[in-house]
Image 1: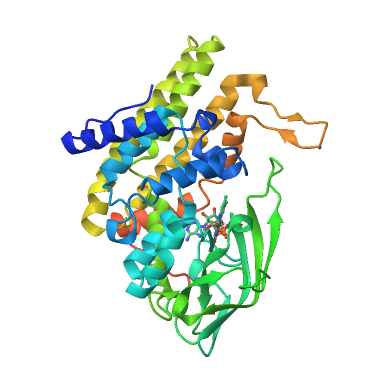
Image 2: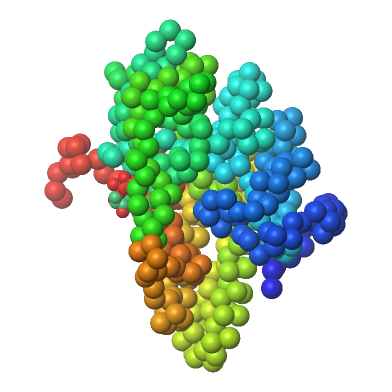
Length: 410
Ligand SMILES: Cc1cc2nc3c(=O)[nH]c(=O)nc-3n(C[C@H](O)[C@H](O)[C@H](O)COP(=O)(O)OP(=O)(O)OC[C@H]3O[C@@H](n4cnc5c(N)ncnc54)[C@H](O)[C@@H]3O)c2cc1C
């Protein structure tokens, strides 16, 4: 039972146009396949043709301004777009981190030349980005990163270790943070470098990926070792040593970029859950009903919260610290809802070992439960989001610095 928002005549006209286009063009072989399945499931028949068709019709990077090859859709129109793809039951393919994270950061911080060079390559799928931020000793405290960038003529030479690099094995570019000045306070000496992972002859650009095995048997992220990895100085976004400012834009988008549209996926998941539990004959159980009522109200709150954030994004052109409220809310909701579904399904949720290759077979509900264990970690942990909301949204005092002298006891 997908939700349809009433968002005024302009959005309604866009809805009608898109609905008609999808009716004519939607690929039969992808009906019922979710974008998430495509992102995680490797090659799916018809997916690359569908991506090409969406690109040609201008349905890729839709929220980017028209002058940069996007469609200039407002947040409201993007919400409509997601609802219509969900209604047509076909995946809305996107350009992943290129579209959501690095592209918008280039739009805010890049030079005209950088915009011309990098943005079209994201739209047409030539460049597929992964995020080289976290390191073994720099996660929540990201500015503690140690990867070095040494300037050598027109190039920056990067050496260090990244970790948890999602999608690295499918990427050819990394937006990488490197310390290009060792002698200034930690937030000031960082540069944001668009780093090619391969040389022109196809050999590795000093990048070694070591996949990290996950409980379900897949490896969606890697340890990433950079040894004398070279990138043109012209690939530094936002200027030398100004990478922290660019990073804030990227992280704002990671935390709040989907806020206006997220409820669509969760509404769909909620009603699928209801149908499944109905079929099991358990929806008369008062505990189940109470949990479903809790979930429904949370998805609705997510929708209203998304619309609230939308006005902020429209005013500032990028999500501010309030995006952290969104990240905190949906990630904790998704964890609780998928755990509830595991319990409500009972024995069906158990993992069965697949004799053929020693892997565990996890259906989509069980996979989703596992996957959401990480949702309160990536993009900034739930605790870090609470710090941001406390200090930067509510204006509460900062955490005391343990290294400063304490006031005398009263
Ligand atoms: C599925 C997944 C995908 C990821 N993909 C990427 C990626 O593509 N690229 C990338 O660069 N990184 C990626 N990450 C890494 C992610 O950004 C980090 O895991 C995250 O920032 C937390 O850092 P950490 O793991 O080092 O934990 P730590 O920072 O060591 O935190 C450990 C614990 O301490 C708590 N804590 C830390 N500081 C504070 C504080 N000041 N106040 C209160 N509590 C605090 C944390 O909340 C946490 O519970 C991914 C992580 C996951 C799980």
